[in-house]
Image (cartoon, rainbow, N blue to C red; front, side, top):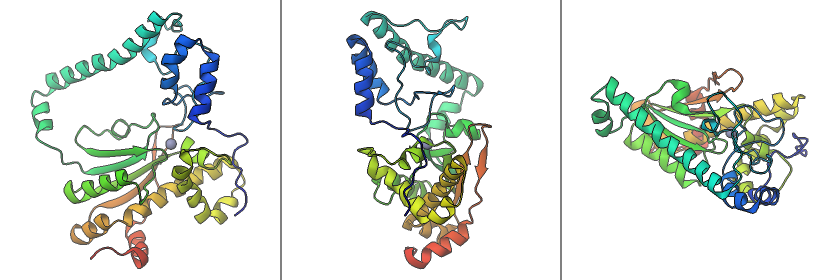
Length: 306
Ligand SMILES: [Zn+2]
C-alpha cells in the first residue's frame, strides 16, 4: 500500500494536546471551566466554517476567554459580539445560561406540541414503532430527524464518529439487533457526509492515540479500494469518494449480521441504504446500493440466515 498523504496538515490534535494548549493560552480560572468543554466540542482553528467544524476537528484555538462560536444565544439582539467573560462570576453565568436555554427551549417545544395536538404526548408514551434505523456520524450539523422531516418516534438513531459499523462494537451491534428483531424496522440507513473530519483524520499519517483503532476501520476501507482511490488525482474528490465507499462498506457490515439476514429471509425487510449528506446544499445523496446483490454477495461467505 502506498503511503497515504491526503492531507497537507493533520486535521486533528489529540484532546490532551489541545487541552494543554488551551490551558496555556487562557487565564487559569477560564481554563478550569472551558478546557473540559473544549475537549468535547468541535470547532476549528483556521478558516472556520460558519457553523463550526467537522466531527473530528481540533478544539478551538480562539483567543483566551472567547465564547464558543456556537453559543448562539450569547449575543445581544442587535447582533453584537458576545461579551467576553472576564471573571469567574461571568464564566459561571455563561455556563448557567448555555445550560438553562435548553430547558427554555424544551418547555417551549412541549407547550407547542401539546397546544397543536392535545393527544401527542399520550401517543408518545404508548411506545415506539419506528420504520427507520439511522446510523450516522456524530457531527453536530447532521440532525437526522430535521433533515428528513421525521418526527419523534419515527427513527431509531445511532451515531458515532464517521458512522462506522464495527463487528466488535457492542453498542452498534445491540442497536441493530434491537431495531431489527424487536422494533421491526423496515429500512436501515447509513448516512455519511462529505467533509467528514473522522474520515480525514483517519487518513492523516499521525498517531491519534485512542482514536487509532476506531479510525483504522476507515484505513481498511481505503485498503480495500486502494486502486480506485489512488487513481483519483484531486484530493477533495478522493476524500469524497472515500466517504461514499466508507458508507457502502458499513452497509455491507450491516448485511453481514444474522439479525438482518434472518429478518430479510422471513419478512423481506429491512432493506439497507447508503446515503451521503452535503453541507453545501443540505441535500442527501442516495448511493443507490443494490441491497439484494450485496446480500447475495455477502452470503457467499457470511451466511447466517439459518
Ligand atoms: Zn463525520
